[in-house]
Image (cartoon, helix red, strand yellow):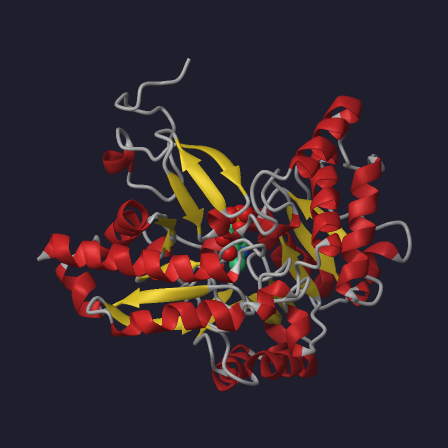
Length: 426
Ligand code: PLP
């Protein structure tokens, strides 16, 4: 039996103010393509692909059927040690192949945060295996988001996410997010021989949709390569077509050491994340018996999740969805750019991939610290569009199947929401 809408919830929402949300949930019941319906039968455009992940759109029976078939046959089996299931092997081979990285191997986790932990630990272990156990420092960036686990919280560069948890992990430094020179300086200060890895998102997502400046990605890649520092690309958001390629990094012609994938790998139909590891990083652990890597999760390589991933990738290939992340980037940016003249807005960012952000003016947020959350609610209620509230902006990252007409509706819906917020605050 459905729980009455006004009944206080038992569900502790992630990233939520439960004091405000407990009797005020937004209940979704159905999805189809780029559209969602709530429990009152109202229809919305899913302009954020849920949480940057429903890349193939909602309601794909094919993925549900593939997962169901695997669940009936063998839901899963532990992959610790030598155990494995067929879809796990198949998806690993597919993801390794799609990366184009020489000798690529794939480590599976349950999501992006898990995968971040894998990269941080493997980076240190790799150097240790080469007799460089002092290389433990990991460099991250301001405005970065790398999930909420131990390393991820510490690597994150969004200030409000880092406070109140007590001491974060040692051995992590943050550099200015878009400066090769800042990275170079930090490496020099730490001593390159002490640095294990540098981690970055090709386009910063949760930190506000910040595309890299021209040459930045190529510059940090070259710098890390020249200093023996492992390059970790966190493509939790930017992968699976979001910026027009399978893993995001290909756009910049670089060859990373580890690439994190999650979200779009199953389009969120079931939870899955992981890491594509370059052959040269895997080598010490794969070349001969004798070195066990004591890391992994209960659901690393989960059979039904991998079956969902295979079905999702099949759809992406068949419908040629991956290039749409780039083909539509200009259309999305052009649809939102006029919002820059709205009285509440300071700027609109985007243009690299099917992702963009509309930032509210600092004085608007200062006068009303809840303005971003309210902009999301007003855009939903007055504009019929679901966006993602971030720290200072609302973000848009629709499914890759979105049409140009729907993109125009997103722009109109956000304007209606901002107008409604403006009117409510007058
Ligand atoms: N890394 C990046 C770049 C992300 O955007 C996210 C989530 O949005 C994560 C890691 C964490 O992924 P998850 O929420 O699946 O644990």
